[in-house]
Length: 140
Image (cartoon, rainbow, N blue to C red; front, side, top):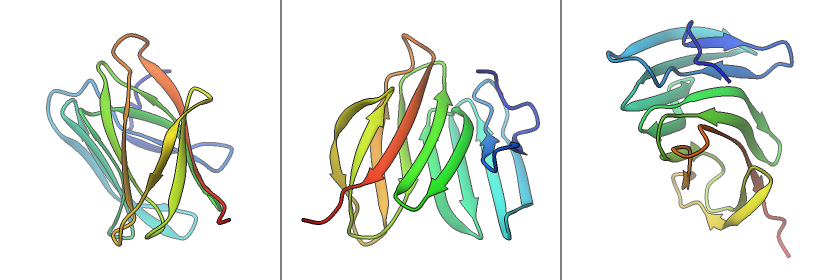
């Protein structure tokens, strides 16, 4: 994986890639059209944040580079790269249970509140990158 030099780009598979965790100063791209929505990214080594139509979608502390971010019916999937372990928050459905997978391994089931935000940690310091999938847990 490599940093996203243009800060935000469309991929051939319909996903987006964004962020640059190596920047010393904040970089941003606003009003980026993608599939009928407007995206905004702010990124540098301390934080990476993505908004869709003015609403929260992704944040990491410290900053990360994210490739092939896709919103799915059941949640989100992406690959993330960083220089150190990151706390990631994603915007999902309100008051819903999700299972988080990092490199194919479940790290647990977590619930969103009324704001729909879900936070989890990803260990990047030792390996540099990880594949993440957040999937809604079916009601029983």
